[in-house]
Amino acid sequence: MEEKQLKLVDEVIQKLQTVIDPELYVDIVNLGLIYGIDLNDNNDCIVTMTLTVMGCPLSGVLDNAIKEAVLSIPEIKSCEIKLVWSPAWSVERMSDAAKTQLNVWSKDLSSYDSSNKKIDFSTPVKKYIDRYDDFLDLLLELGFDHFKIPNMIETVGRVMTLKQAAQAMKVSLPVVKERLESAGYQVVG
Image (cartoon, rainbow, N blue to C red; front, top):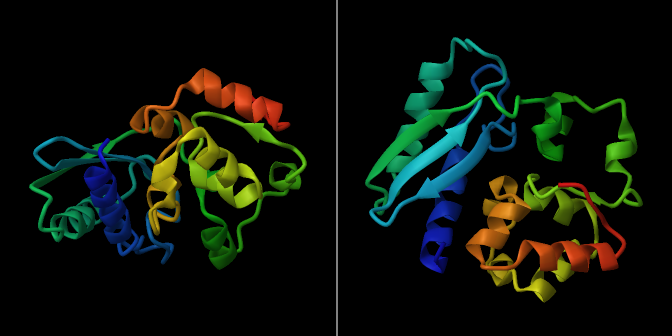
């Protein structure tokens, strides 16, 4: 993905952060409902997402709000919503800010232990950047230069997995795995 498209994805994520779940009063990005944002060369946008529960009665309301938010960006030509159920949504997908706002914290705090350095390539990058002090430095050392762009981590990093970031920035996954392991991380995916 080119830098111009990454910046556009960043704008889409910022707009999606204005879409508030009417029952939980938290935006859909921080709730962890957004699984991906794809743009083609014509700037047609596909938002891949899930809902907290199957058969959510607010699905239509959210669809309309998402399309309105995304299409408010002049460069975006169309917006399609791709609803998926796998992986299933869980509280763990929520940002720390959303968990705090809703007072929902996992009883198993081992997943928040910074000494437990497990990395899964299918997890959004921001989770590890927030958790481990040296993680961003390692990414930049490996050539993930797009994370130097202001707000890229706070927006694209919330939904872009390490695997997607490596593909977009043309960084070899085996090289990433090797470097992370040499820095004391356990790569599990």
